[in-house]
Image 1 (cartoon, rainbow, N blue to C red):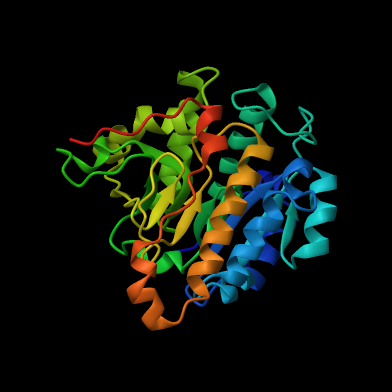
Image 2 (image 1 turned 60 degrees about the horizontal axis):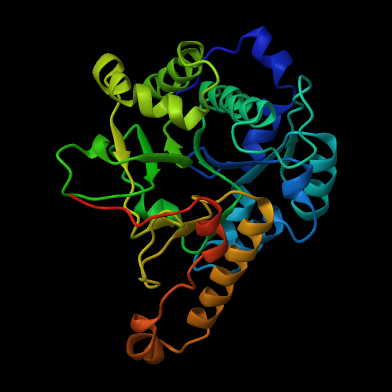
Length: 305
């Protein structure tokens, strides 16, 4: 479904409408991530993220459909040096060239600006999968995203035993939204709700409004199982099933890079096994514990119902 273009959006996002047809899949889906200069530096999060597509299973072709949104000119320059599809979305109200601390003014401006662009992507008629850049893509995530939901969101702590699916704590570091009128309304409602929760980040606001989205807008929201979409908050030692690994429950770019490199090394060892060896040995493999990240937030093990 395509939506009428408005002049203010065209001016806000020049060139986006021309870029998306070059990036999308046959079913008009794009993968989106966002970076600033700190995340795009050589050896930092963007490099690990892109490398994971090349080292994953059935994922290398997805790079053709990945749009990296740079939030400053330095991030954009680095992006175009390593990836063919980059878009500069300048955030002029604050300086985003250094690593934005969680909940700082810079961080908040970053996360809310990305929602503005995502709304425009939907209005242009493109589905999108957004992922944070502090993530490894190990297998094709679209194989595990339910087709019936308007929106699918990763979770910090997933249990099918909870009374209602939305009782699972959702993490907006990875989410898929369909380009329907309901999908557009989700982004509009989410962005508008920022004013009701001053100083809150996008995930916190989403947590507060997720039931409103279902009850008022009729949106179907599906939490994603951490067996497939894991993170440092909660993952499963099931390398045969994992699709993504997110460096959530972590503060500090250096900590994220260090622990994601350990995960990437574990994955390389697993991938290097012959099929029989995977069956014999791989099923007993465990991920290296993301100790630096978990120490950075005083992590404790989730308690399931």
